[in-house]
Image (cartoon, rainbow, N blue to C red):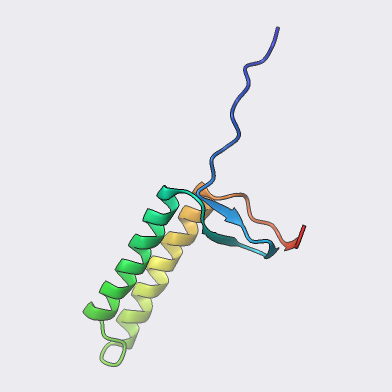
Length: 85
């Protein structure tokens, strides 16, 4: 009996060619996530100006970046170290 063919996963973020991590988005969903990340970073810089409230600004940048990294783990290629292969 033949097994049904499952399509390969559709990643929003592909691995970088060199090093560890992900490159720029490759799907529209990835670009939406990245655009929201940039928009929320600019909103955080307006809401918590770095010169007036550095801890709040730093905390918001760390939190937003952590969320982006979690989304990359969830919807991106599994990361590993690459030497250009």
